[in-house]
Length: 398
Ligand SMILES: *Cc1c(COP(=O)(O)O)cnc(C)c1O
Image 1 (tube, rainbow, N blue to C red):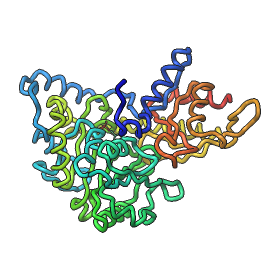
Image 2: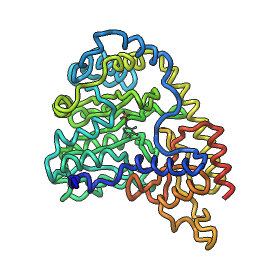
Image 3: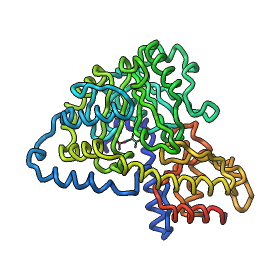
Image 4: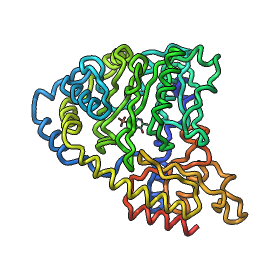
């Protein structure tokens, strides 16, 4: 009876909602599903952060509306963390903005700067919200393919002038979801130079900056001289401290861009529960030992899954960052038991369905993140080593 707006119809179905449905169906049929689907940490938030929230909850000061931009003490904690971690100086007064999760700030930023018809440059495969936010603002998405041969970096020189003339914003995300690729500082320099040349706002999604292995340290784009002229950077407590359910993150960098985003937010939301901000301050300001312990667990899982998949003939490399394994499935995989048709005839979605129905293993189809993700599956290592071994064993029986 009530027809939905066109903007909802042109949006692809939210990938993870669809996966969740598939999983529920399998569970109902009695399948013991091992889910590598959504990137949601299974390990609890560290105890000292939980206790900080518990204490802050009891303070009536925090029961009222928070300030729109976040408590000054939270923004100071972010600035302190950026100085220590990246050597980047931020003015807590207007170069840091609290967010109800990075997703919220990513989804809202196009509303502040994109007029109907303006183009937004979006990496694909990529986090689905870059596209959704663009579509909601009546912007035009231009997809930048992330190809393996380019190290999953977009080839900026391939973007036509006719596109650049109308482009106003570019999203970038490293360490990358879903490919687990990292970007060298030289690429960040190129991106800043490119943005300045073409008058682009750069929205740099650095939500996996702390989820790195073997001594690799992910840079901030704000480290690049002059980056603050054109960039904001998103970071979040979600992945670093296993706090996806808490909904707290921030954007930082260029004050003019942040002020635009802030204007949207003051009209739509009322900030982050202050007790959650207090807990975030605790997370950012105390020992980072909990992060290191978390990484130890993830590293073991990563190694077990990568080695397991390799033994099964999958083409995977060991990622330096994120909790994703971006795996190209082997053409020898028996897609069709009866005809022996190989799997390279399969789309990622079909492969995903086969893995689920035959092995009870759920991974995310690569092309769900964009056409260049075809032929890949994304495994989020949010299950225990024991279950990973079990998943590999089940896949080996095929
Ligand atoms: C998880 C994720 C986010 C969202 O983080 P929240 O702070 O929980 O909203 C943003 N970008 C990428 C690439 C992510 O994987």
